[in-house]
Structure formats: structure tokens, C-alpha cells
Amino acid sequence: MVSETNDVQSFLVLHPPFNQLKQAQLEYASTNMFVAFSKSGSEITLDISPDNANKIGMLIVRSGSLEIRTKSGELVDRLSTGDYVLSERINRKDKTPLRILVLEDCLYFELSDYALWTLSASSNEIAALVEHESDNEVISDVVSSDGDDVLIADPVVNDSYLSQHVSKVMSANIISVSPEASIREAAELMKDSRISALLILRANQLVGILTDRDLRSRVLAKGVSDDVVVAEVMTMSPRCIDADSHLYDAHLKMLSEGVHHLPVTKNAKTVGILTLSDILRANNAEPLSLIRAINRADTIYELGSAAENLPGLVVKLVERDARAVDIGKIITSFSDGITKRLLRLAERKFGVPPCDYAWLAFGSQARQEQVLGSDQDNGLLLPDGIDIDDDYFKKFAAFINDGLDHCGMPYCPGDIMAKNDKWRQPLHVWQKYFTRWIEEPSPKAVMHSSIFFDMRHIAGNVELTQQLRQYVLDKAKSNTIFLAMMCDNALFHSPPLGFFKTFVLESDGDHNQTLNLKKRGTIPIVDIARNYALSASLSPLNTIERLHAMQDAGIMSKEMAYSLIDAHEFIAGIRLDAQGRQYRENVEINNYLDPKNLSPLVRHQLKDAFNVVRDAQSAMRTRFGGGVI
Image (tube, rainbow, N blue to C red; front, side, top):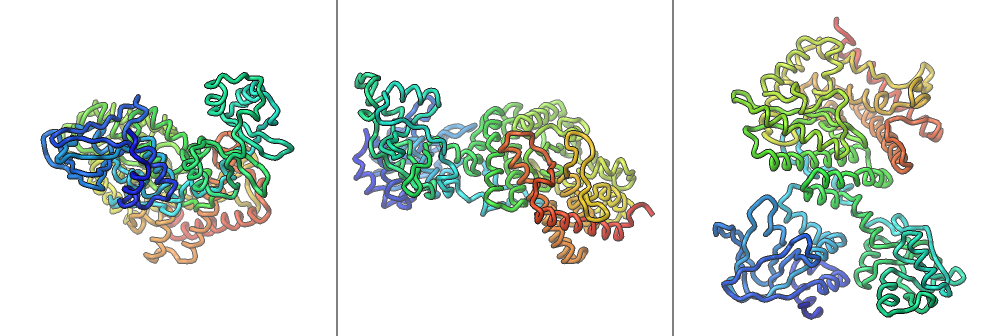
């Protein structure tokens, strides 16, 4: 039975995390609490079956005490008044469920799973609790070059969707009828327009709202004829929200009022309508929601459904003027998280791996510089000195590569993927690859191998990756011929500037008369930073971090390093902005831009950025010889 609301609130307000909730949130929590009692010596079972609409999300002890033990009887935790446990912690995926044993007669509250997640959307405290208790790793933790976990892009990731203004999320398409319209006319309009609420206007003034719930409870349930006018069954003087309010305020109002629709006003004029579905859609394109969906995915299909929300998130981050370097790291953190989840699913499908392994990312994922549509580049590093079961790892790698493709990271056109036998090898074979590329370089080999010199550990035995990376850095640092050829390869990608600082546009294909902002914009800076980093055996992989490290090490002037950092941020920002527009317009996402779409000021600034890159390439040619001497 539901406990007395005031009694529940009085209890909750004394205990964390509920003592951090606002009044409306407390009221919502209390109305979704059920009270239960179990006698000493009994065992509590939490029903979380998917087909149970009232499945339990959390248990809170009101009085008495409980113990949580493993199936074998090992003590995990002991709970008393005010303590709580999430059902996910008890009914663990891939593990034997824990047992809840009653030590003393216990009175406890049960909060529904739906209510728990609804509260987590509007309360940072509840959201943090849910994330902390999860058995799954949080994917905003990515592995750095030295194997330590680091949290990236905190200011952007923590920017909650609830901080947005209502005007950004509402539907501005006002569909309405007059109060004198019949119920049948209103219902047909709602059906044809595929909406769940209809605004009722008289002389452009809001007088009511008709929702699908009104039709069920006030028309069908009471047998009202469909030729009765809407004024008889509508909700009069509905609660409204100002367009400049935050979604946080709108969500709280919906929770406290028990409604799913809010007309939106501005200067006393109705300008739109906000629904609970609009808020949920906004949430689905937020980091916290994506992290949760990825961590909970049990199939490739579920992972793919979660990944579909990533482009929307990126566009919103661009609109919030997030830095390109932060957006690249965020996109990459989700790619890392999807990869790690796929690795777990693969181990579940094929069994425990027969030996250690290290999953490696190359290219933009290794540098944490992915953009929308970035393809996958990866490999599998295996230990030396053992009999490797390649049949297992072949199927294992194919599962990951296929899963990444399904989740929006297309197969590598050059087949640089772990399912290719060549890129699934023990340590000594990988060392032979790099030795040949460094000590016996040729222009073609350097061109094809440069991507491998951006290499980052994703999962598995990090010591394997560290051994290989250190081997590569040691080999590359002292080989001037290799560095000269890498320089020649980098100079192949020149900025698109003519003799008089005019743009040199692409001249063929589907993207004629456009700028390639990747090949001619960001890639030249990536190449410069990689060459300098390899020459000094510097460990950072991200281009901006490499440029900072080069300046700190004294191998590049502060002026040039910071000019390249500004140029990279500017070009990458324009590239992301263009991709955001392409996504909004539902056209192919690519790296091309017609400079005519830029303002004269931005065109001038872009030319200056390209000129910085050209000057840096000239300095690199002087430093490394520009060829084999």
C-alpha cells in the first residue's frame, strides 16, 4: 500500500540523498513510495521483471535492519534506518543476485524504478547516486597514454539538458481549435496531426487545453457524445510555462501538477507547447543519458539505438559554443565506451579470452579527435611466448568491428581493423611492423603507416600497449631518414591557399568548388604535431596536447605552438559547425565547405589560419630536411 505522503516526506527530508530534493521533487518521490514490512529471519526479494510496470528501483529502510549477503553467505553490507539500496545492486547483470536478509523486524519503503529514473533527470544528487551505484564503468572515463583513467571535458559533459530554455525544446507549431468545436472535430485533428494535446483558443487567447487523457477520462469513460463542444470537457485555464524558463522549472511543474503538457507563453502570448516527450527527447541527447544507455545495453541493437543520439548531442554542443577540442574528446569517449561495452558483450558471447590482449585504437580515435562520421581504425595486440587461439580472437575481433559499424563507426576503407589477420598479432610481430616502417621507410609505406603512430590503449592489458608504445618512441626518435620521410608525407597535405592568399578549391568530384577542411585543414596540423612529437619521444597523442608539450620541451617556439593551437581550434570549429548544419538539414555529413557560405570576416580569418599552417610546414621542412639527404 502507499504510505501516507506527509509521513513519507517527513522521513525522507531527514535522510540523504532525499534531504537535497526540492519540495516538488519530494512530493513526487513520496507519491511513488510503497510501504512494506518483513519479519526477522525472512528474506526480501525485489521484483524488477521487465513486464512489471511497478518494478522496484530502490529500497529505503524506515526501521529495523537488513543484511546484504552473497549466495555463499559472505557479508556485503548492513542497512539500518535511513539506509538504502538500489535494486540494480541486488539483481546484478552477469552475476549471481545478492540476498537481502531481515535481521530485525523491518519497515521499509519501495520507490518504483520509473520514479527513480524520473527523479534522476531533475536531481543531480539522485543522478549521481544512480551512476555511482551502477556496476558498469562510466564511459566518460577514458584511458590516457600512460594507462591512467582521466575524466575529460567536465564543463561540457556536466551541462545538463535541464538548463536549456523551454523555447529551445518546445513545439512552436501551434495546433488549436475554438471552444465551440465538437469533440469529434478535435479528436480527428489530434489524430491527423499526430499530437497528444490540443490548445483551445478564443480570439487568439488561450482558454483551455484538451489532452488524450481528457478524452479518455472525461469523454470515453463517462459516455459523453462526440458532438458535444470541446468547452464542456477541456481543462480550463491550464498551467503554463514561460518560454524563457529552464526545462528544470518545466519538469518540476509537470511533476508537481501531475500533467504531461504545458502551453508555452511569452509576453502573455501563446507561442508553443511543451510535452513530457519533448523533455525526454532532449534528455536522450545528453551525455548522462547516453552513458546510461550504453552501460545498460545488452545487445548490439541496443548499443546502436543509443549511438543514434550522438549526432544530436554533438549539434547541441556546437550550438552551445563548446570548444572543438572538447567536442572531439566527448565523441571519442563515447566511441571508447561503445568499444568497451562491445568487448564485454563479446566475452559474454565467446567466453573468457584464452589469454591477455590489448585493444588498440589508431588515428583520430587514438588522438581523441573524432568527428561525426569518423571511421574505425583498430588492432588487437596479443602477448608473446604463448600458443594463441586465433580462432577465438578472429571471431572476437569481427564481433567488435561489426558492432562498431552498426553503432555509426563505419568499417575502415583501408581495412585497418582487428578482424584483418594482419592487425591481430602478438607483440613481436607488431614490433617488426614498426621496425620496418621506421628503418626501411619508403614514401608509399610511410603514407600508409602514419596512422599507426597515433596509437592508444582502449581495453585489456595496458602493459602490452605500454611496451609497444615505448618501443616505437625509442625507434623513431633517432632515425632522421624516417623523420624526413614523415615530413615529406606531411607536406603532401598543403593548406588550400594560392599565391595571393586566395582559396584553392577542390576541382573535381561531387564536392567541386569547396574546401576540404579535414585533408587541407586539420590534417596538416595533426601531421606537424605528430612529427615533432616523434622526434622528441613525447608521449601525448592529442594534437593540442602535443603542441603544448612541444612548446614546454623547447622544440617549437611558443609563438608557433600557440598559433597552431588557435588555427586548429578555428578550422575544427568551422568543420564541426558545418557538420552540424548538415545534420540539421538531413544531408550527408562530410568535411567539405563552400566558402561562399562564410561571412567575409570568417573567410579572412580562415585564410589567416591556413597561412599559419603553411608557415609551420615551412619551418618543419627546414627542421627535418624535407626529404632524404
